Image 1 (cartoon, helix red, strand yellow):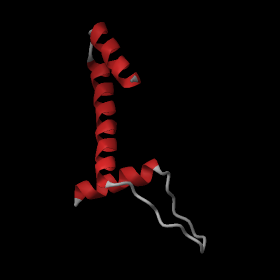
Image 2 (spheres, rainbow, N blue to C red; image 1 turned 180 degrees about the horizontal axis):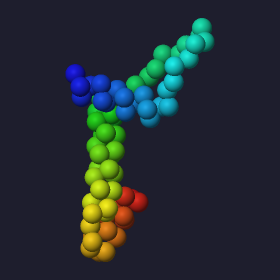
Image 3 (spheres, one colour; image 1 turned 90 degrees about the vertical axis):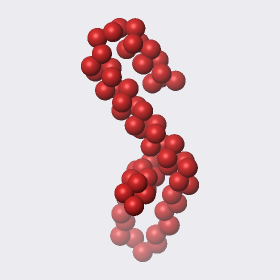
Image 4 (spheres, rainbow, N blue to C red; image 1 turned 120 degrees about the horizontal axis):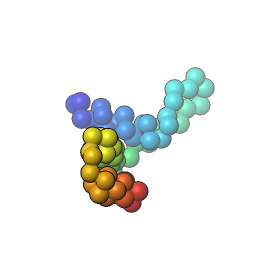
Length: 71
């Protein structure tokens, strides 16, 4: 259940969805779970690479990781 909530949050956040008080509301279209899982993996990968860059003292490692993030 928690995973589904996280994936739904990723889908809503990617669409910049917001609450609206208008009478005419469009239905929120959340992408398929497989796409949401792939997006969550990208987010986690990016965060973890940033964490390694912060603590690493090896210039070659940092450069390689920065190239991976840019790709």
